[in-house]
Length: 347
Ligand SMILES: Nc1nc2c(ncn2[C@@H]2O[C@H](COP(=O)(O)OP(=O)(O)OP(=O)(O)O)[C@@H](O)[C@H]2O)c(=O)[nH]1
Ligand SMILES: [Mg+2]
Image (cartoon, rainbow, N blue to C red; front, side):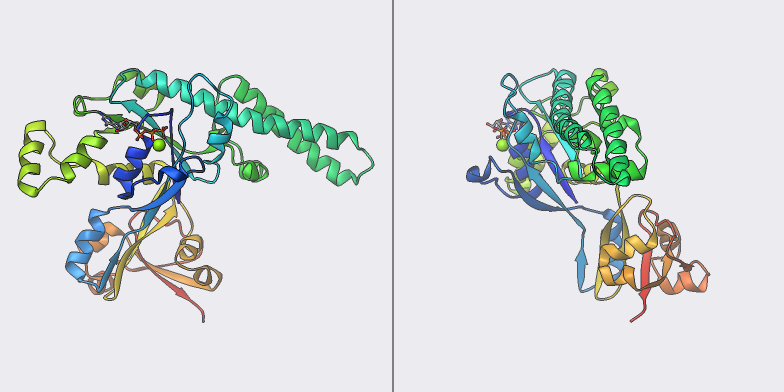
């Protein structure tokens, strides 16, 4: 699960990278992009662990990718810079909210860059397909496949040219599959993050930004890092002065994680309590594969307790069993966020 930080040069991506991962970006690696991990905090797991007291508590992680900023006026190299993002599962558009106030305009312009980068890729493919389709001395089946791809590519070109992301097409799974290798940026889930300065961070985000990006979030990144570096006593005094009740870092990681369509399930035991990252709405057999490939290949069944039932049973699996709340589910069960699961596989 990789989240790519993107934005115009100097919008604060590397600062956000350090805030989220605790690692300073290496200036030598700016051009190719760099990755570090961040735990996805979960208060539900923290509570479970406080009660079960396992030897180990493990939070699922996200990889955060820092990328070189785009140039606002010189577009030439922007497609390459955006190319670094193609392998990420989601895009975080970092908006400069510390030296500028035109948040919506920054997002609008940035989305154009994404459209241009995708248009270049799809346009190149159309040119190539045209050349391939000229050679008719090929099996009819192959020609048919290429023609279908061409029709799809032309629909995408038309969508991008009308200023809409490819995601608005709502493509069915088989068409998404054809496109997978192109890793189109406008098919990826996107979240807008406003990097606020030392003031205004408690104000609601402007309506014009929310109209463009309803899930946009904000935090005073540099200020939080400076506060975090203080001793406990000073920090609390400054936080009270500034009107900061709680740091936004954890909540931000969670918003990014859920915002790109991920969820978690829990495994609970005396050795380890753990969150596992899954795509929202996945089947039990796929969730099993998130733990280990073998578990999905040799999947027999899953024992599932919903999180609400687990809490109602005082965080006791034994109690949940006694009350008949421990369900047996098959391969196609749709896993819910925070389900407590035991996967059973054949040996
Ligand atoms: N005052 C203030 N300055 C910030 C904040 N966040 C970042 N900066 C400053 O803005 C400058 C650019 O920040 P970076 O994090 O390097 O920005 P970037 O997006 O990684 O820049 P490029 O990689 O060049 O595109 C640095 O001097 C930061 O210290 C903030 O919240 N407040
Ligand atoms: Mg940077």
